[in-house]
Figure (tube, rainbow, N blue to C red):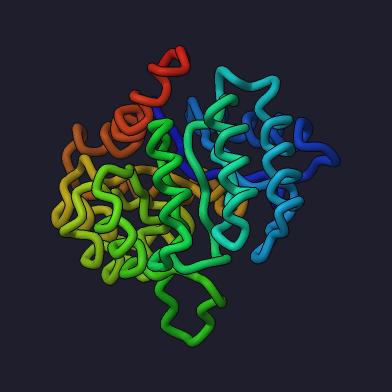
Length: 262
C-alpha cells in the first residue's frame, strides 16, 4: 500500500483547493497511491507573512475536507514568525487533523529559531518535513537548508522525527550528512529518477530510514515511483519505502487522533 509523503496544491488545475485536491487524488489513484500528505497552499511563498501561513494552512484544510480517507496535511510554518507558527501548530495539530509540519526556505534548519517549533511538534507526536537542497550551481536560496543543516537540527532534537526533504537534492551528500542521525529519514521526492540513489540510501541508512515521496504535481507520481520500482533492492525493502516506513512514523500521531492506518 503506497503512501506518498510529499504533495502540493501548486501546479495543478483548479480554482479552489477542493478542485485541485480532487485532481491530485485522481492522479494518485491511477498510479496506485493510497494516501498522500499535502502541505502549503495554492502558491509557493518563500517568505510568507504570518497571515500567509494561516491562509495557506486553511487552503490545505479545505483540500482535506472531503478526502480524510485519502490524505493527511502538514502545517506550513516559518521560524520568521514564531508566535504565529506556534499558534498554527496548536490549531492544526493540537486541535486539528494535521500530522506534522512543513518547513521550507525562510530559515536554515541550523538556526535556533526552529527549536520551539520542533519541540511543539514533538509534543503532539508529529513529523517534521524539512526541505533541503545542497545546490552546486550557486543558486542556493536565502534561508534554504542543506542536509548538513538538517543534521544539526536533528542532533539538537534527538526525539523529533525529522525527514530530510529531497534527500538533500544532491543526494550523495545528503545521505552521508544525516547518516549518524538515527531520528532522520531521507525522502525520494523531487529530483530526477537517477539510478543508484535508492540503493545508496538503503546501503548507508537501512531501508527503514528511506521514505517515498513524489513532490507531485511538480513531479509526476510515475517518475518518482520509478526510483523505487527500478531500484536493485529486495522487495521487502521496496514495501518499506513505499508505505511501511511512513505508516510507522505516523502511527503515534494517528493512534492519538483515532485515525485508522488503512
